[in-house]
Length: 103
Image (cartoon, rainbow, N blue to C red; front, side, top):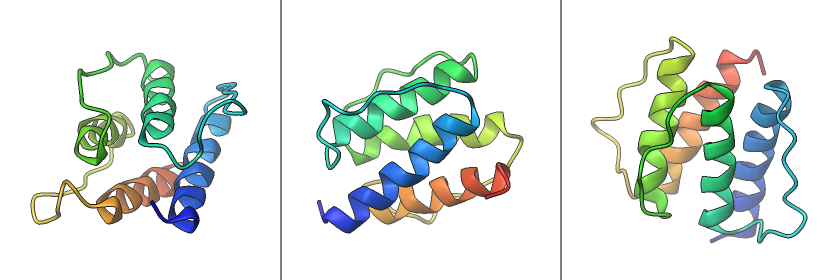
């Protein structure tokens, strides 16, 4: 994965974690890893009292987690015309979540 994209995703997820008051230590994690993104998304779901769905630790597996977070904020986002295997879809969903937090 492109390092700039990974940094952008981590920055967005870290903002959301901090805004929810979640302490998350990623110092021993590969910051360009999908596993790290899933761990952070899972921590956000726990902060929202959501059950973490079973999902592969790939881009497609992030989609239902991000959808649950978007719905938990009362926002609507139609991703039916987007590619679930695209990191751009993840970035769009993270933008929606940041907007919900006033970023």
